[in-house]
Amino acid sequence: MLNHVIAPHLSGYQRRDYDVVDYRMSELPETGLQFRGPFPERFSGGQIGGTEEPYVCCVGAAQTFGCFTESPFPTLLADRLNVPVLNLGYGGAGPEFFLGQSQLSPYLNRSKIVVLQVMSGRSQSNSLYECGGLEYVTRRSDGRRMGAQQAIAEALFPGPAHIGPVRIPTRLRGLAPNNPLRVRSRIGPLIDEIRSNWVESYRSLIRRLDVPVVLFWFSKRAPNYVESYESAAGIFGQFPQLVTAEMVEQVRSMCDDYVECATDRGSPQPLVSRFTGEPVEVNPANDRRDLGHGVWSENRYYPSPEMHQDAAAALVDVLESRLGREVDST
Image 1 (cartoon, one colour):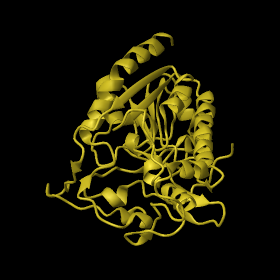
Image 2 (cartoon, rainbow, N blue to C red):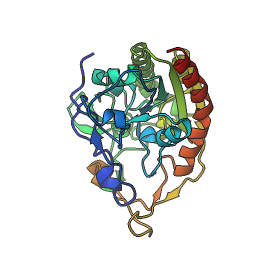
Image 3 (tube, rainbow, N blue to C red):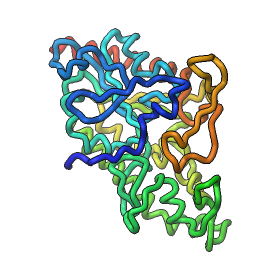
């Protein structure tokens, strides 16, 4: 697959969240992509490096990136493992995104372990929209750009419902509101397609990795969830949206280890200025205009700092054990 040309749809959250955290965004050498810094010193001069010093790669979306936290779980792992950890968290990403970025392969395959986050199903191209593995999508029928949930909602629930300045249909129009089976019959094939494509993207990505892969579930919910066909939000569910336990099992079978961390400790997280220590409001429109229908005084969506502590604690024993085996074998 050729590399996708990614139009800048996210700021890397730097502009949006700057009052709370400085993410020190930098371009990873030889990739053309920006990730959260600082990078391990070995990469700062543009050298990917060999095997003389072990390091770990963490691959994922905003939960790996670490929105609104000074020390995301990759940073905590670096401290606890005493090895460099490269944080390749990318906002809104799904497996399709990383599958399309072959320039990252040297970083991944020269590491000792890849921690691969279970990412959202909404960031997966399908017959309704193309997205290059990112959550801001292009609808195939008319070329309109929008969030994935809006695209699904407009396909499923015709007729506008106003939420702030954005016209996002969320309830049934022209269908019986108490007839979820009818709704399922309309949208079910598309949801099944998205899920099948998501699994295949993971399979293709994992096949490209020459190092052990630890699949990492990091969410406020367990893999099992009950979807509701009364709204687009009900279909998507909590992060990772659209992902079921069955999908996780299919991907898990290709990985060397699986770690699950379901926690909501510290959430919601009050947002505090790093300059004054006072409460602060964050405007999501500074990142994406279509999300600009209210400001945030709390982080209710992304993992809290305490959740990142739980994530590191869940991963550290598996990584220590596997890292020891990998180092001994070299």
